Length: 146
Image (cartoon, rainbow, N blue to C red):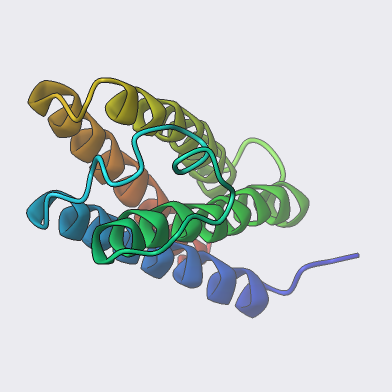
């Protein structure tokens, strides 16, 4: 099944937007002090769906949005491989985005387990910025005729 260029571009742009929203949600978690509202990972207070307090809602929304981002990033990488093959900069950056996101999820777990230690929180934001940049290059390059 071939993926049209415009369909891929739409997916790539949606991926960039979802990563950006995830970073904003992460900032909200930090700025509201909600980082330890769910003190365990991947569950929250040992539950898949915890009792919602304002702080839990902020942290839990960040975690749920991460699932959407993960689906979009993986789909973008799969469709890049189908559309552009290898070697191509879109394929390279979409694959890089996927691996960076996997590292980011692990660092998110470490962030919770560390009790939101500031150095780890900063590293989490720095890696999020790399995920965003890589997704942005993927999307931007999909619009370049080569």
